[in-house]
Amino acid sequence: MSFLDEKYLLSSEVALALYTAIKDLPVIDPHNHADVKEIAANNNYPNPWQLFAATDHYVWEILRKRNVPEEFITGNQDPKVKWMMMAEVFPEIAGNPVYEWIHLDLKRYLGIDELLGPDTGDSIWDKASEVLARPGHRPQQLLDHMKIEVMCSTDDPVDLLEDHVKVNKSMNRTLLRPTWRPDKAMNIFKPGWKEYIDTVAKRFNMTINSVGDLIEAMRQSHDYFAARGCLASDHGVEVPFGADVSEADADAAFKKALDGKSLSKAEQTAFMSYFFGEVAEFNSQKDWVFQIHIGAVRDVRDTLYNNLGPDSGGDVARPLLDVFTPLKSFLNRFDDRLKVVLYCLDTTHQHLLATMSRAFGGKVNLGSAWWLNDNPIGMKRQLEYIGSVDVLANFAGMVSDSRKLLSYGSRFEMFRRVLADALANMVNLGQIPYSVAEKLAERMSYSGPKKFWGF
Image 1 (cartoon, one colour):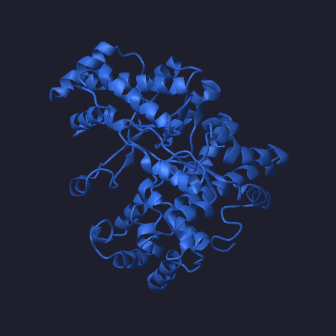
Image 2 (cartoon, rainbow, N blue to C red; image 1 turned 135 degrees about the vertical axis):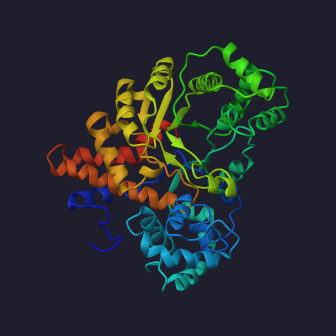
Image 3 (cartoon, one colour; image 1 turned 180 degrees about the vertical axis):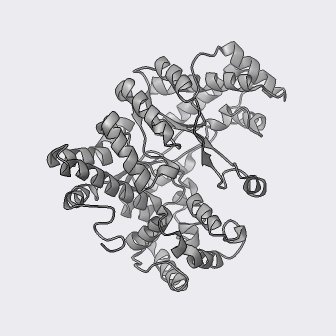
C-alpha cells in the first residue's frame, strides 16, 4: 500500500467497496469554527501558510512539540519563513494525523503529490502559491469543490450574522448556517463576564439587572438566530449542568457577580445550571439540536495563556469528572422533548455517554469522536463501541470542529474511510450482510445527520 493511495485506511476489498459507495456524497458539517468573514470576502488566500497553518491549533501544538519557537508559529515572522520551519520538522511528525491531513489537503485540493519536508518546502510553497492565486481556489469555490452541502459556524449571541447572509446570497443556496453559542453569557466565573453582559444589554437595547433580564435577552438573540436559519446551539462545559436550581438562587448569584463580588463554586453552579436549563427550553420549543461538548479543560499551560491569551493551545482532557449526576438530571428534565448531541474529549466518558444515549432513546445521540479523538484510532474505537452498545444508525454525524477551510474535505474523507473499514470488518466477520452495511454507511455519512439536524 502506498501513502494516501486508494486503500488508505482501508484493510480489505469490502472496505474499499463501502468507501467507494460513500466517498462522493455531499458533506454535512453541523459543527465547525469557520471564519465566516473570510468566506464572505471570498478573496484568494495570500499564501499557503494562511490556508494550512495560520488558524490550525493542531498544527501549532505539533510544531511546539518539535521545538519550533513560537515566533515561527503565532509570531510576526514572514509567512514563508514559518512555512519553511514547518517543512523542516514535518517528516518528524509522521504518525500524527496532522501529517495525513496536510498531505491530503495538498494532494486532493491543490494537486500536489510531493511530501512536505526540508528539501521540498520551497518548491511546494511556490506550487501552492500559484494554485491558490487561481479564481477556482477562493474560499467559496473550494467549498463547492469539496461538495459541502451544509456547514454550521459557531457564533456569539450578540452577532448580527450579516456575513452568513452574504455568503448564502453569493452561493445562491443555504450553505452556511449559524450556531448559537452562549458560553460567554453563562460562564460567570470567567474574567470579562460582567463586561460581556454590558455588551448583551447594548446589543438588545435593554437594561439587565436580573437573571430574568438576561434570559429575556438570550430569548431575543435565540429568535434572531432562528430567523436566519439557525437549527442548533452549542455548549462547551467541563461537566454538564443539572436542572434542579431555582430562579431565586440563580438571581442571587447573578446580582452578586454583577456587583463585582466573588462567587463560591456553589453559587457559580447555581447560576450556570439555571442558565443551561433555560436556554435548553428555547431549543426544545424550536426543535433545535442542543450540543454538549464535555470534558475539555482549557489553557492549562500558563506561559501560552499569559503570552498569547485564551484558545492558543494547551487544552487537555480531564478524566474522573462526575458527568453522570448532572447529565441524568438534565436529560430527565428534557426527556423526549429535546434533541441532544453528546461529545466527549476524554475516552473514559465515552462508555457513560453511550449508555446514557441508549437509555434516553432516539433524541439523545452521540456526536463524532471529538478533538483529540478525531483521528483514525479514536474514531475507530468510538464506532466499534457505539455499534456494540448503542445504535450506529442513530449516530449524529461527523463534524469537522475546524477553523481551517480545507479540513472540511480532509477530515471527512478520513472519517468516511474509517467508517467504511469498521463496517467492513463486521461484514468480513459475518456480523452484518454487505447490503445492510452499505445502507448504514450512507445513513451515517449523509442522510441520517441531515434528517436529525433538520437540514
